[in-house]
Length: 279
Ligand SMILES: [Zn+2]
Image (cartoon, rainbow, N blue to C red; front, side, top):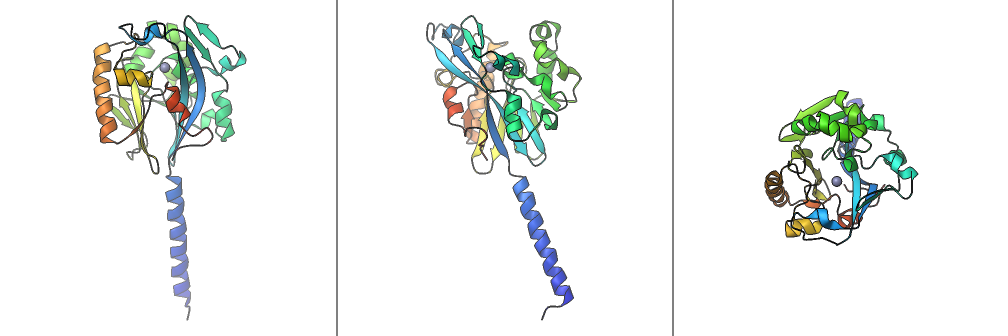
């Protein structure tokens, strides 16, 4: 026999189960990789300070990443500036040929996200292939290593690259020294790996099905460089890069992480094609 009390208790538990199911599905983290440009290099002479790749060619990827978490969205890197897509021939600068096929804004729109809805923005480092669209995200909270912030807004660097990210100077900012736990639950961690620039960072994401993923920033530029331990000519501090690479490799082992070298075309091609995602 059903009493009113037993019906009320049953309903209570049904609601509780439904609610916990919702919480579970909402905490499901998704990692989207977007195509934010390509880079054809006609001579890899800058890829090693010992001349290892002189005369060789390479095609690089230039992705941006969106991490969707129950507590908000994090955009990791913003790629080439969207206006580059206006010219299908892209931009040639010496041996470097940059192109943008599809705008970041249009890709976000494809999954119903507008720039001012993104809660957090972080850049692996300030260079224009990573900060190109940063000014469009000045409503987001900017999470940045304190040395990188100081460097990017120094007069010299700002005069070179500031046009891409100058609005972040007055954005709501959270700066950190060693590590920052974006959602305060250990799932998405920004870690300082200086060397390429004074406050370069990498991103560790703990996904439910895929496992742990590490996004390299420009600590390495290509897979071969990781294998052969070669050093790009552009380093604000070579010894710091060497130290950071040791930390990175130890972290990758400790976390059993899938390493994604951001500019490595093969790593990008193996990721689910946007709007598909890793979870
Ligand atoms: Zn880069």
